[in-house]
Structure formats: C-alpha cells, structure tokens
Amino acid sequence: MSQNRFRLLAAFLAVYVIWGSTYLGIRFALETIPPFLMAGMRFLAAGMILFAWAWIGGAERPTRSHWITAAFVGFLLLIGGNGGVVLAETRIPSGLAALFIATEPFFIVLLDWLRPSGKRPKPLVFLALVLGFLGVSLLVSPGDLIGGGRVDPIGALLVIAASISWALGSLYTARGARLPKSPMLATGMEMLIGGVMFVGLASVAGEWSRFSVAAVSLKSALAVLYLITFGAVVAFTAYVYILKNTTPARASTYAFVNPVIAVFLGWALGGEVVSGRALLAAAFIIAAVVTITRHQATSHTESSP
Image (cartoon, rainbow, N blue to C red):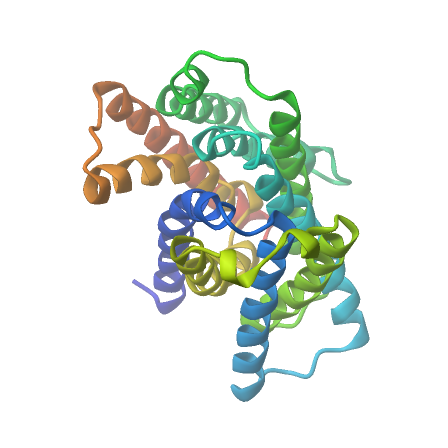
C-alpha cells in the first residue's frame, strides 16, 4: 500500500469514527453552554492549535487571497454547516440530526452535476445514495427518537440547510479553492475565522448574558475539550485532506457512516442493544458506501489532470 493511500484511508477512518461521536458530544456541551459561544470556543481554540502547529512546522506564509478564501470556506463549512447542526440540536435529538445530515451526499452529487462542466452521475450512484439513505432511515427512525411525536420543523430545516451549506463548501474546496497547500494551515485559518464569526453571533444573540463559567458542568467541559481536540483538530484536518485527494461524493460518505458508528459506539461503550434492524441498516449503508467509493474512485482518476 502506497503512503498516500494509507494516509487517505487513515483520514477516512478518523472522519468516520470521530464525527460519528461528535453529535452526542455537541449535545453534552449544549447542556450548560450556549450554542454559538460553544462553537466559538471550540473553533477558536482548535484554529489556534492548528495554525501554530503548521507555522512551527514550516508551512508557507498565507497570502491575502488565502485568507479571503479561508473566510468563505469557513463560513460555508463552519457557520452554515456546523452552526446549523448546533442550533438544530437545541430543538431535535442528536440522532435525528444525524439522520438529516445523511441528505448531504444527495446535495453533493446534485450540485456537482449542476456546476459548469459538471458530469451527470450514473444511475448506479443514485441507487447507492437511495440505498444509503434507506439504511440511515432504518438505523435512526424519527418515531423511535421522539416517541412517535412531531418532528420540530425548524430544527429539521436547520439541519437540511446545514447539509446544503456543507456540500457547497466541500465542492468549493475540492474544485480549486485557493488555500495553502498545507491542510493543517488551511484548516486552522478556516477555524480561526469561523471561531471569530461564532463569537460575533453569540454577542448579537445575547449569549454572554446567559453564560456563566461556574455553571458549566464537568460533562459539558469535557465534551468541549473532546470536540476541540478530536472533532476539530483531528477530524476536520482529515476531512480537508480527503477533499484534496478524492472526489466530493466519496468524501461525503461519512454522512452515511456516522450514524452507524454512533449506534455501535453505544453498544460497545454504553451497553446499548444492537437490534437486527440496526444490522440490516448497516448492511445497506456499507453497500452504498462501497458502491459510491468504487465508482467515484474511477471518476476521480479519469478527471484528474
């Protein structure tokens, strides 16, 4: 196995496993910390770590153009993407948020097709997307999550809007965004700008008046620490690396895999029971990911310069 292929597989593993656990981490953090402030703390801290690490490691000096691009990408991925999920989780369960996020691969394929010179995906890809979404729907059914009650429409719309924003940011990053060559530096810049934006939103929303350090629980504090180190520093850097080294549709398969990881982490660490329905859902999702990955690997090779 080549070194580049090993790095790509390691990056996919990090995104699949870590982001599968962050939905619950966000839920714990929001118990005692307002949403925009929590996100601001998370990304400012992670951004400073990554930027300093890249700088010490000899990364190139970012240009004005790099900063402008990083601000645009940071807005789409962090404010629109992550911010939408954070706000939604104040209204809907974390598992339901993961279900709605599974729509992202559909938007990736659709937007990539609609862009100038975009290629129409083959029917097999559409079939795989439907199969993956069916798998997630089996895995995380709204009826189980909310006791058969009504899904909050605002929460649902927030997550769908977040999926579209994330898809746009991912496509822009993958299709020639003028970012530094170092994924670590590029991610750090995006997070620094996104963190500043989140703090600004927190101020506008009046969150400072509702925040007290003394009121922050140990569980919320540990959740934020986990979201900074693993959810942001490790997984986001891995995701940017994936976008630069494979197709956006292939990168978006994490949206199908994350709910599977969440369920099996609950079984392995929380003593939760894995049902036959969960195993069937996992089979659907794995089949969809394998199909998309194999097809997009061929497409990526054909379209690479």
